[in-house]
Image 1: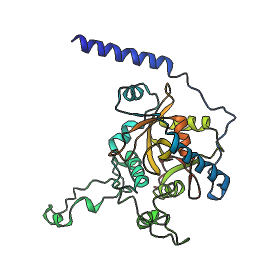
Image 2: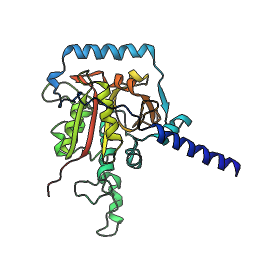
Image 3: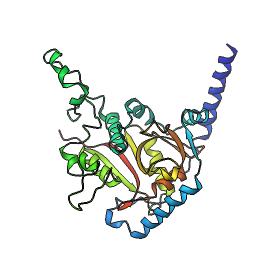
Image 4: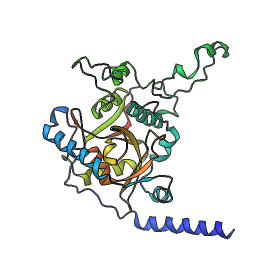
Length: 304
């Protein structure tokens, strides 16, 4: 009984201290505007070389500024965060990626289901593969037990295929270049989410916008419900195995200046907190035609 009382008092004390200190947040200067979307042609070769050097350098110094979210400190950060409105909806809809290539579609599916998964929305498809074909004959006539939700299969449709097909994601040469382009780049995922009728803002992290302004932009997103953030970053900069990766962001903790990454490969990596500066370093890396970055996503305007 005494132990329970102590834990209750301890939790209340932490909550009080957080409420007293958290609002003292820094804000982006009003004279630091965030420019409109950049295009691939804007990515100068110098930016790519600088980002490549950054990625290579981090492979040797191996920074250790990651913290598992289930650790005692990780749980405290989430409890005291004033910018965790996205955590619950994303956690409810979370699913791991099926293989090593589908991090972008998986991140998108989690966000799409967080936005639309509990609505009777005609835009939301059913996935035929969720029921074995041979089992369908035994179902009552007119009964379809499949849920209307996005999956890593149904993310790809006729509209997204105009950007990139599933087979091209797996390495089929692109028609325009004849070269294989495995996975997805930030701009490609941006265009595919637009094809799903979402409102999407792309931010390429290349030094053209201050990190202070970007941090504030992401914090504002995480602090209110109904919009989400997907990041595209280099695992090498975080001293993790692998290359480029996509995952949703779930929260921001002011006291530690860190973001919670809801890693879509939980078999090899826990969801983790990462220092904001290190995360921006991981996004400010070059990928094929331009730097990586992040997407701000909300529901688009629906045509009645």
